[in-house]
Length: 361
Ligand code: SAM
Ligand code: SF4
Ligand code: SF4
Image 1: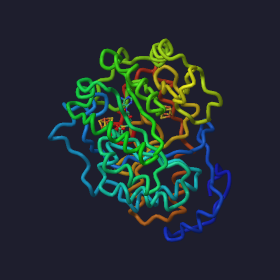
Image 2: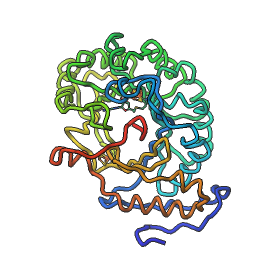
Image 3: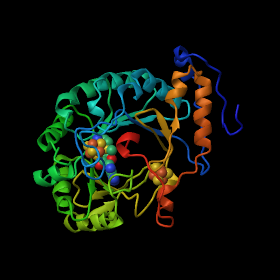
Image 4: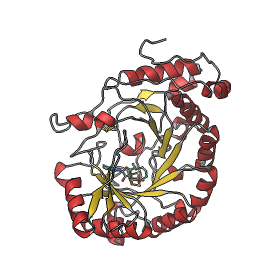
């Protein structure tokens, strides 16, 4: 077995023997910057019912766009097997994403099966919220721990324009209510773009304070090749924070956690809400990055900005043993050197990057 392993695991060839594998201590592995692997984001589908301008612009993702054929998408059993195997490397945190994960017809079953594994401490979904009115209660019953709902505007016209004419704002807001009623902890994700939705910052914060839902502002990122990203459209977190602080004074939250992407603040006026900033452009956090992603097609990406993933689906379908698969994943993580965001300003990128809807946001 490879020398970089910190701890050995017992051989196991059969998927059916997962229960006995799960009793063993996890085998940790560090990458080239000493970062452990802790969380896994899985893109359940590359399809979406929205066409957000910054993610799946409708001019490219139009009626003729070729999404992945269903046979190429990871199947439920494959997803469960991958989670079980990655758990052996220390993954206890799973986020199901996409595309729009709630478009997957077997979403409730997937959540139930992950939850039944009893290996994952934190099972979350990121969604545009439009299908939550019908799914929130079932997701809760199936064992979902947390939800992140993307909401970039409360003004119907701005929401409509950002979503490429597909916004279902009333449904998303109903979805937020349904999740609160089902007692699923929620966070809001907001991407602010210059000249597009800066006017929505204070209304969104006001909404999150009233509902006592933590809110995160994500800097507009240069993910993928289709959104025509331009540095000038990024609103730095520092600007957003100052604007909010002038309305609702903020104090830094204590004890930032290792691997946490957001810098968090609470309100001076004792509103119990929380606010966070994810500043991939102005304050990159690669040195703490413990995340891997699995694309809809079953490729392992070790960075959101990578050009290529490692094909796991073919290996899964080739009859490779669990033990060999685990060693293969360890090997990939061990060789990881990614720090794209830290290098972005010094080396302007000309590399091809996978789309976020495909590799999993
Ligand atoms: N469809 C779901 C949703 O919108 O929540 C999940 C997938 S989406 C790709 C995941 C997250 O990525 C969303 O919160 C979205 O706002 C964010 N996102 C997509 N493109 C982005 C970009 N270029 N910059 C920053 N965030 C982006
Ligand atoms: Fe769809 Fe989410 Fe991308 Fe918007 S951000 S297009 S909702 S995948
Ligand atoms: Fe992680 Fe890559 Fe983002 Fe850096 S740029 S934080 S390595 S995903």
